[in-house]
Amino acid sequence: MLLWITFLALLLCLLFYIKLTYAEQKGLFVGGILVVAYPYLRKIGWLKLVIVSFVVSLVTLGIPFFIANRFDLLLFIQRVLILFALLVPFEILDSASDNKKMQTLPQRFGIEKTKIFGYLAILLFIFLEFNFSMNAKNGLLFSVNLFISFITVLIIFFTSTKRSRYYTLFWVESIPIFWCVLLLLIKKNF
Image (cartoon, rainbow, N blue to C red):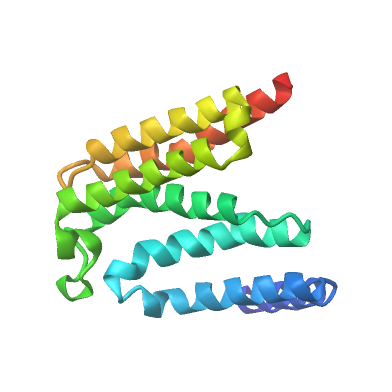
């Protein structure tokens, strides 16, 4: 039964893929290659966060913006940075169980330096937001992004290998949901 469902899903994907424009197909193809290659690239531990941040940004922002002909490189870089920072707690938590040969960021540089990488990503996110983003002109939107950055910094600060897995699974995973709710509330008021 599972084989038939998988075959049907693949067939539907191919039918929808054919109906896309060339740019959309190219974006999905690159994203698909990166997703398929991820288990192999994951073995390059120090690169894992960058790859995941890039692929998620490509799928959630790059491809939809390509489709709408509104791709914004600054927004894409910001998305990669915030995702990188949000993945730091997962990386720290997993460092205790990851194979030592992987040489993930915490294994290679230590937990404190890995946290510093997360802080630097947030700092760069805020810098880009304040100096180059159109959001700086919209004080409320800028404030929400600044608030989410602050929460992310706090989450990174309190992350350790001794924390419960639920800390990461619940609190870190809830940040994007909370951010989305705040953005929807702002949009509703404008």
